[in-house]
Length: 137
Ligand SMILES: CC(C)(COP(=O)(O)OP(=O)(O)OC[C@H]1O[C@@H](n2cnc3c(N)ncnc32)[C@H](O)[C@@H]1OP(=O)(O)O)[C@@H](O)C(=O)NCCC(=O)NCCS
Image (cartoon, rainbow, N blue to C red):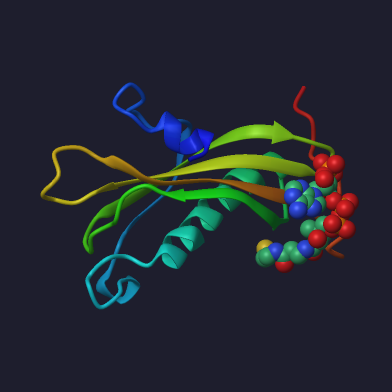
């Protein structure tokens, strides 16, 4: 188990960071048993991380790495999927962003964390060359 999984307990029940993306898990995103594909969740997480990175970089970014990923619970079709992001680190051109996914089915009383991962994005220019992340004053 890694640190991310250890953080997921009843003492740590609230999402960390800002809501970056919200959608609904549809039947087309599921396998034959009705559980949502992990790859679809990773795709939503990449989009959510990019929303955060675009804002930080004030422009184009590319995903360079997914440094950790943990799937904590299965996701049912029809669940509302909420992706939260918080910035772990900013380098010259890179931004490490933690993305948490929380899911709530209509039969659930409250959302539960289902996935968490660290995504690294790089700020790039129109020629796909790296560029510095702007520093806020
Ligand atoms: C992103 C890309 C432009 C970076 O180019 P590069 O030649 O690796 O650039 P650098 O070696 O200078 O690394 C740039 C930054 O990324 C970081 N980085 C590179 N590889 C990394 C990795 N595997 N994990 C974490 N950070 C990494 C570097 O540490 C550096 O950070 P810093 O500028 O904050 O110090 C290039 O790798 C690329 O185009 N990759 C494909 C991106 C892509 O298609 N993504 C999927 C769709 S968006």
